[in-house]
Image (cartoon, rainbow, N blue to C red; front, side):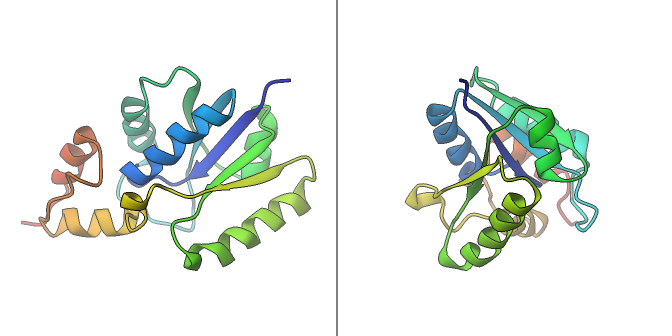
Length: 160
């Protein structure tokens, strides 16, 4: 039986920390779907189509990874795409409480799903999309935190 994992998030933008987790998940699971959410509770810098495009470029070398945008419940998306595992990232202990709540809610919504938590390599533990966006908008150097293609897109949003 194939082990299909879904790694959901807003990925606004996709960072080197995300990329690290996705690459490691690709080594564990047969197929990984990076599910980019059109979250109505957030106001992303990049529209959904651009976030999907950037992730596809960054992850193009991974044959068992696909990127798709979605709206709605993650468990519904995972079910529709034959996912059996939901992958979530934990950067620090502060992430755990929220991620634990999400995992329990997902299990409550559909008992067929397991949530697997991955932690990024040490050099990526402090990187968040929010911080990367803020640094980029204020003209800071984000080249160590994102793929060059993402960096170029972020530069288009700098304040003048």
